[in-house]
Length: 211
Image 1 (cartoon, rainbow, N blue to C red):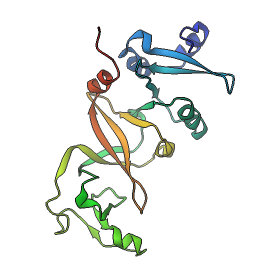
Image 2 (image 1 turned 90 degrees about the horizontal axis):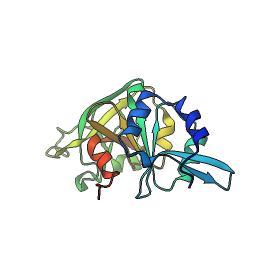
Image 3 (image 1 turned 180 degrees about the vertical axis):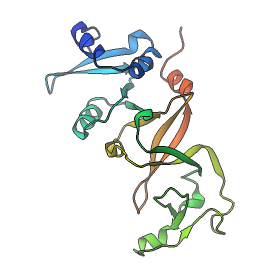
Image 4 (image 1 turned 45 degrees about the horizontal axis):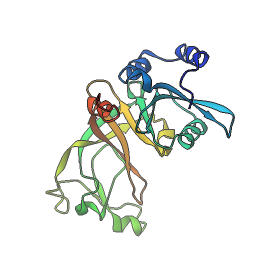
């Protein structure tokens, strides 16, 4: 690990945004811009934030190529992406969701639409071209409890590379809350959704208390 490479830091500072700097300033100085030497590729990887518990946090303000995403995820074993969601086009949080892992929903799959609805998994398995769409007023789903922190969303012009990420993804839309981008595995295609969490809690989780 290389912790002080002044020339690299100067080059990096010319490229980063105010959003990027504000995020880094939320963490102790010793956590920021920690550099690692990649012997396999004779290259330097510099983590935006590297925590004592071994987590790397990368703040991404712009779209990223799949090759670069794969490279960083392969190099850092415990990587967390924080994305500037304020720059996403056509991104909108929609409705509260039930617990996607609720046993009562094991025989159903969420529809890929802006309207919160489901289809029977058995009909998907049969390959029916038009499985019956059920909303949460339908007798089979009525009474399912909704959560306070899970949300559906729409993204009209998605950066689809993020759906291919294997590391945790946190979307920053501004304010006191963040949203973890998660996916429910389904036969009709993984269903992406958001899990809300406190910005302060996220920072506290990765910043040990002072001794």
